[in-house]
Figure (tube, rainbow, N blue to C red):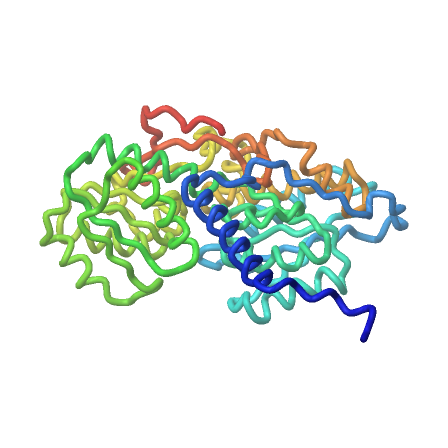
Length: 412
């Protein structure tokens, strides 16, 4: 007989143990069903980096300080071109002011129109081969998620100037910072406006299938559900769909008195034009993309009266940067463009403060908050999202953005 063998259970012991485990599991399941409160809400806990790196000595000052830019570097790109120009302008200004200890900063673009393939591979090369000190990017939530995977492994700071998808920060990666207020903040404001101005009157919700529009739609539907408000119809289109006639005709013939459009700036403009052509008296609401230059130029006079959440401080429209940008490039700087300028300036300030040490650069970005930029305050919450207040605005005649009298959404 093997003396090291475990003792055999008494008859019935195995069955008894099985019943007891089931009983405990059942009690645990019942308890979870009775309460929907999470044991830990990671969104309210300050994300910290507790790993190594802060003690590493700085290298000798290089010939230039490299920063990766995960976005299109083509000034004529319909959505991202202005952001590249704004970020480049911030670097130019920093270099005229002495750069970093006398050496210039330089942006290393890493992008392709297939960010899931060659785009993220270029970013990885910039991080591991070129030796960049931080990353600015990207132009939307989907591609920022990709960049997140790179910086989380490389332990490198990323500042996102344009995305509003809150889930980018919900992975609790300590290296991620988002400069624009997230979808849940403006969705509450838009839902409140719909409840107050439309009430129980029928409205149609039109959304597209791209990542950011779906994330925004989920937030708005949640805010509407909490108010007991819902659309008469919810129409979902493929992003970039060519034929909008059937959708516009269906809405025009419906009982809807208002339409809410959540999509990118180009698709939103096309939908607004198609709807105005059929029913000019429709009340129209949109997401933050209504404030983009790409929307305003394509929608033209059809944009008059469209209501939308403005993610920047209203004073940004008359800031020195906006005047300089328009004078130099002949373009109106929209909210994400101003924010890209701010994001680059904030990152440069952090590098100057921390020196060439990745962990300390991350700490400095966090420590500089709250930081006042041209687009408004940048105040990072526990998971690195900006808690800036949002205002409801409308497009007036001539494409001017007019802020309504609504109170701003309070900081949380």
